[in-house]
Amino acid sequence: MTLEGFLLLAAALFAIGLYGALSQQSIVMLMMGLELMINGLIVAGGAFWYFVAPQTADGQVLVLVAVTVMALEMAMGFAVTTAIFRARDVDTTDGAEDLKG
Amino acid sequence: MAFWILAVLAVASGIAVFVVDSMARATFALLASLIAVGATFLLIDLHYLGALIILMMIMEMLVMAVFMIMFMMNPAGLMPMSMLHNKTGAAVISAAVFALLVAGIFLTDWPDRKGAPPPDPTEALGMSIMGPKMLVMMVIGVAILATMISTVVLATRRGRYDA
Image (cartoon, rainbow over all chains, first blue to last red):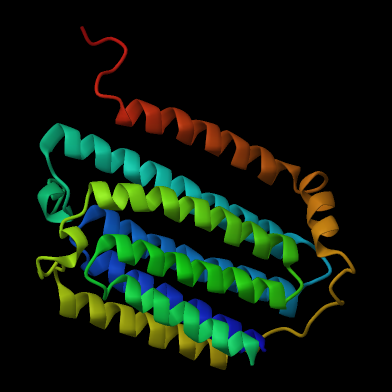
């Protein structure tokens, strides 16, 4: 159990999440990718607290923020998905590429 | 040893999220990954945060499962279909990011540990967010309120001023 081990886990989760966020067509599956990426950040935050600066609670506060962000991201994501599905019957990212350059 | 088992479990179920056919199954694979991560926190004295992650993610993923089934493109995996776009591009980018992060992890000279964990990390966290880090807690509270309002506004069929 080392800092490197934890960071390796964090990097792996982040990379898998990034793959999902980039490759999934379904908007809700894209959000699963984002959740996995934040999952990686949580691991890294906890590891830095334990292995680098356990005396102050800063790392723990960071994890708390990341967990909250995860829940808020999911809530907002589903609201947006519901709104765009209702307005335009779109449930894939390819159907909502109006801003594509 | 326990850490590596949990780490492999977390990564394997993370991969499973994008491999399984059904989006409902993907939700539970993500839940398994999140629970494994919560369990690793129990190994590094973060009992409160570990339990918080596990309990919160169980609820979150159960809510997510409902939405997943609502928006499912491929019900129960009965119709094999690809739900991917730009597969190679995504794989290349994420592999490159992973390689970059791993290089950073092993090449960085991480600082030595300063001090030891307090006897009760949960108390330290509580004292911190009710003391010097209270601003963080207040911002989180306002963000949650803003999210609640905006999700309701976005999800309702009609706004207040529609006929």
